[in-house]
Length: 261
Image 1 (cartoon, rainbow, N blue to C red):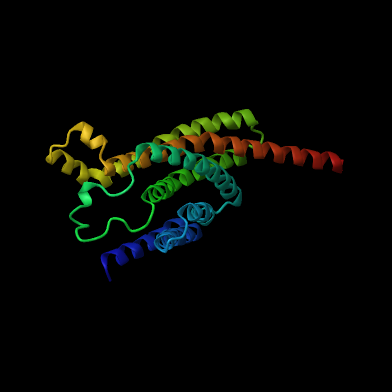
Image 2: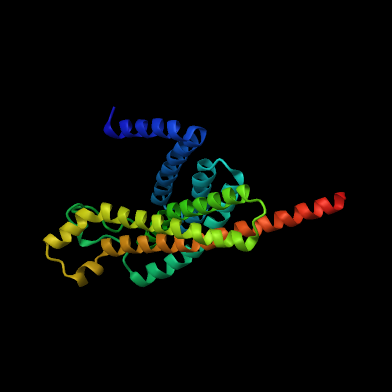
């Protein structure tokens, strides 16, 4: 068995032990999302329209992440609505920022690897960069949406008489913790994956101006910013949707009771 296969087996066993049925579904969610990414890459290589593929696979990936990884349907439904709306908003921001940055394509660091190969494969590098940025931000947005919805629903279950204003206030408090952990996770993830490149920049004597204008760094930094903005938008939007939905349910239950009486 290869190292990768052994690690996948360990991951599956631990997820089953810790999460039980939800852990099994979460593991299959990871596998399905990996297959979806491979499928997207294959379809793009076949020349299928990248914007159409992106619009189709955004809800598919969100549904896989959220519904398979969450045992509560109410949490999953609210998380999906809020995450999908935020993803659409962030996608518009990504389109604008990628056009302004003009950082798509291959940097000079890839020169030795691509010697003898064509760097014009007939695909739109800017659209590929947009798709990569959107898919990279999906995970952070979905995670924040599920965390917010789960916390608020548990609060509502234990305090059934809580008002909408109190629920929104609690959502703000929960959101502060979610933001702190999510941002640290995103930033440290970027630093960990980018550490070798940072060392390479410094050993080669890159100036600050050269680093911030380097394609690899700009693309990674933009993806981090998109993810952070997505999380920032998800926290208040999830709170608003859940509080609004609970208020509607209470009104319906009140009408049903009055009609019964």
